Length: 242
Image 1 (tube, one colour):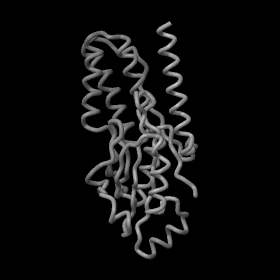
Image 2: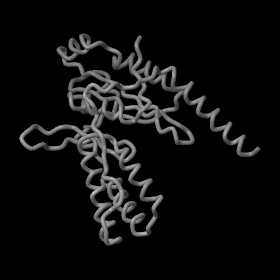
Image 3: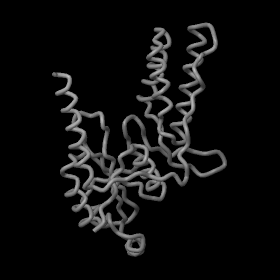
Image 4: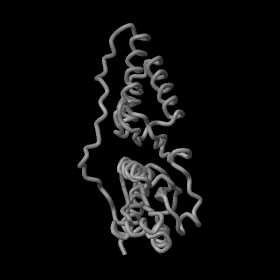
């Protein structure tokens, strides 16, 4: 049996969720789990909901009115003291065990959120609305306050670090637009406080290439990565003590 891939990079997991939801898998549930428990979770979902089915098997199930389920996995933030794998089970219209056994949410009403970003459906001029990721209101307001604070307090390292982090915004249409808005806010705040043009380079946030290769890991690799990271941290602690 083929288990679902594990995404080490957050933006790849976000793109996978965006693609699945935009193709109709707009019901979902999710959570976090310890890496050692991940294989058991995948096997349970495969047995109950057929997450490992081929495209042809899914088509046949759809013809019989059965929902299709996909499992999306992100390895988690490497800077957390106890890393946990994030998982989302996304489901298409139809019936079946997954509908009966899981408390599924509508992505249009109960949005999928991840580290300060949310998956939303945004209108487009002259075209149908599209799913994209954007900063949550709380995250966006926190960015506004952060930029105003470092500029008003003449915190040069803070300004450079803030702009560096802003350039690393996940490159989805709506989150890019927000990042550019924040960049303009920073320049306007500088001009207001410093009475001169902002000396920092203009903000740039790239696009996702349509055919950009996504990096994935086998489920079995997650535990090895966690152990390696723990050993590295223990080595750092030991070295600092010495």
